[in-house]
Amino acid sequence: MAQAAHILGLILLEQGQLDDAAIVFERIREDALGSGLSSTSGAPNTSMKTTSQEIALLSALVWDSTVNLAHSRLLQGRMTEAAAGYLACAKSSPVELTGAYVRGTAIQSSRADLDHWRARALHGAGEASGATRAIASAIHMRPDHQLLRWHCITPGHHHSLDCASML
Image 1 (cartoon, rainbow, N blue to C red):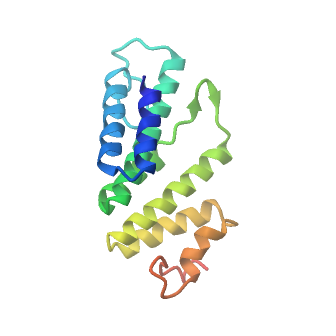
Image 2: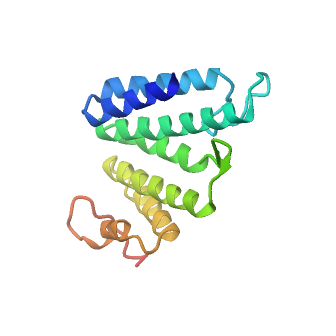
């Protein structure tokens, strides 16, 4: 049921129905957290009995929903909330998804993407130093990624960040 709701949230997000998408992602998180997880990180709630597969699935759903909720906040112009959501996910990337461990490089790539989005949100919120640190972190994790560097080398562009010290 939560997976179908997640797909619905993605469709609403894609169609620009941002408030509705945010509600769906918030409900998924609330339901999953009430079903056996104790935090955004997807840590098991030891007071409830769940299988490791259920925990892995719930963890992935909470994490994905938190990322997508942050995306909806970013698109709504709620930059500070978006940045907080991206940061929470970057700190708690799920290590186990559906019973198979994710390679470290996939997690690093995912965290780089989250830092990239966080930099955009912080930049939109007028927090230039935080945005610069976030993009620096993303570049550090993925130094060959051209899009990340583009934000630093396009002076005067509305997406450019002051990254002179990183280049």
